[in-house]
Amino acid sequence: MANRIQINKEFVDIMPQDYLDLVENGTFESPNRGWKDFGTATELIAEHSLCAGCPESIAFRHIMASIPNPEDTVMVGSTGCTSLVFPMIAVHNIHSLFGNQNAIATGLKRALAVRFPDRVKDVIVLAGDGATVDIGLDMTLQSWFRKERFTTICFDNELYANTGGQESGLMQKGFLAKMAPVGKRFDKVRLPEIARESGCDYVAIMTASKPSLVEKVIKQAVLIAREVGPTYIQIYTPCILEIGKQSMEGLQEMRTSEAPGERFKFREFISPEAQSFLDGLAEKKKAEKIAATT
Amino acid sequence: MYNVAEVNAEACVAQKGCRLCIMYCPEANCIQLDTQKMKAVIVESRCKGCELCVVVCDAAKHNAIKMVAR
Image (tube, rainbow over all chains, first blue to last red; front, side, top):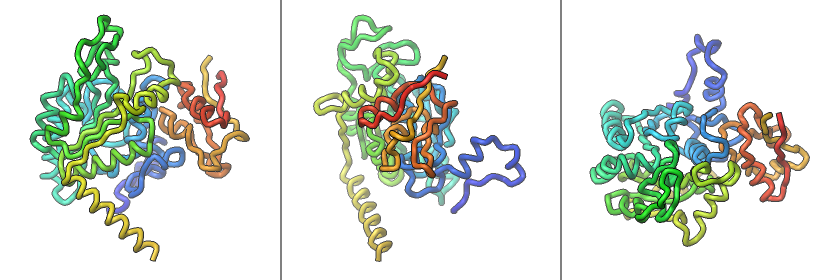
């Protein structure tokens, strides 16, 4: 299967430079891809139109560098700031109707299993908190109840940033936003706990402030979704415009929110089946390492 | 006028393994590693001027990046 990503020789002279860079210097089919490729290899995301200093684009970069099998991955997006980035990534992707992303991913995953029975195909859902928790909660939960084997990533910015700052289900209690002037009266929806109870085999809540941690979590989530069951990751990507920060303050905001006792302190839940699968993977890796050194 | 980041190659410590600015830049393929000189290089046409690289570089006390007007 090696070297599947190539350019037809007849077309080399008319292909855009970005495309040539991706094929020659990209990280497709690299078994150990990760954030360490930054700076030397061409990334699978380019020239997106998000704001300067947007933490969401940091998270997007880390995720695109970490997905284990980009040439065989299909990402499903939804309406929101993420839909500004999807046209700029070098992975197959589908833009769904607002909130419909997990239903589309379900059909896609099943169709891919029928169409390519002998090939590993990953499906990753990436949507904002409005699509995951408010508008698409039905589809999100139902896909977990059915144990559909794909990864759901939620970019949690705690409000509807794209439309001017309305209240969302994941907003913290008492928070004042531009279009929610009286403050939120209810608690932040505890989706990670709901995900655990709904049948997810791996759940993580985190921020995008540590690329090594994002890489580890994304790889685990995609591999568990491939073999065991549904996985859910909630990443805090604050909207610096809506919470009144400067472009260079997004990273500090994420670090503050993941301090001990804060709402985005790193937590993960791994089901017993997923844990035994991960243990098996670690043992295999260890054996390979020993075989390589002797 | 538009602000972009500029790396002072003498102060940059990428040869010691530092990748802070490359790691935290929100723009893809914007800060590259010059593998010959082992220094960080800014691709100015992709820089949106958010100053995150300045923040992480200064926090690590390297002070190798500053914003310049273009």
